[in-house]
Length: 202
Ligand code: GRF
Image (cartoon, rainbow, N blue to C red; front, side):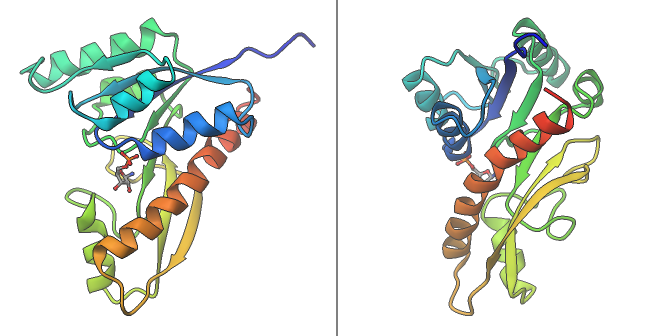
């Protein structure tokens, strides 16, 4: 059997990029083998994730609502960027836009997303950022955590790959819980990439 093809990963971001950083670190320290982040696509021109990519010589594509007033054009640009880099796996890492059917179909079962709650609870429209943790605390949950799932046409509804659990403490503010969950995201996202690669025989 010849040498395995290096898996080409495109990472979509919108903000700080701490999940992107977790992937960069996992590839660089060898805990994810045989994979390369071929580009970062950001929906936000001032995302710190862009600097993280540049630090590691990863090409950046900034594709925002301002550049493409029409969402169809914006999504065509994203699809073109994914195809141009011969992407094998798309990772949504703190990416705040919803991908349309056209993109989902082109990369069926090859798009994964990290969500800061234990899906299927506390997911869906309007359930992102700090709001997720506010809802978890308001619901009186004693546990929360993070989920990595395949992306389908719903919002946070695709097949779950891995989940990581954290306690919710009675003294928790949304910010404290968010920080605890984010650390868990950084642990399970690289593991999810490894699981997907194994599952697909990559
Ligand atoms: C965080 O709220 C995280 O839970 C979610 O996206 C947000 C930003 O993450 N996945 P990152 O630091 O930009 O990766």
